[in-house]
Amino acid sequence: MLNSVDADDYMTDNPVIFSPETDIYEAIQILVERRVTGGTVLNAQGEVVGIVSELDCLKAVIQTGYYGEGGGTVSDFMFAGNIQFMDDHANIVDAAQKLLASGRRRMPVRKDGKFLGQVSARSLLMAFVAAVNRTGD
Image 1 (tube, rainbow, N blue to C red):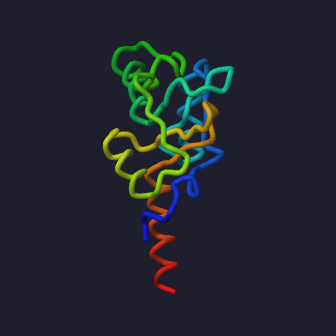
Image 2 (cartoon, rainbow, N blue to C red; image 1 turned 90 degrees about the vertical axis):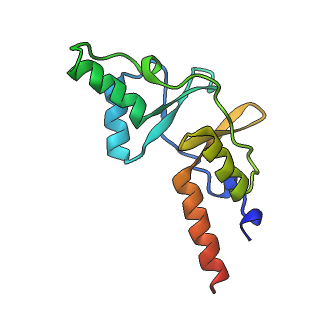
């Protein structure tokens, strides 16, 4: 059942995105307003260069509150290491396993090098609920 549900069917194709130059406090404001736990960071060419999460943003808060040094840009706090990408046609089970293995809550999706959107733990849970409800009809 779940192996037939493609993750890209539940991919967020309009996720929160930031540029590396976005002020970190502006990013925090946007995450809070949109009620999301993070966003994808794209450079001027539209390429994924990082991911910024609530936990990354908390680093900025700690620097301000504890060390008295505040501010910076998204690029100062984002995860920019070995960014993993979700296959655009991964089934929901494979997508969930990839998220779990990465330890991240979201993963960008790209096709032919172009950013398409992102798959998040929440979107996969929504896919699961929808699949279960369809089989119960």
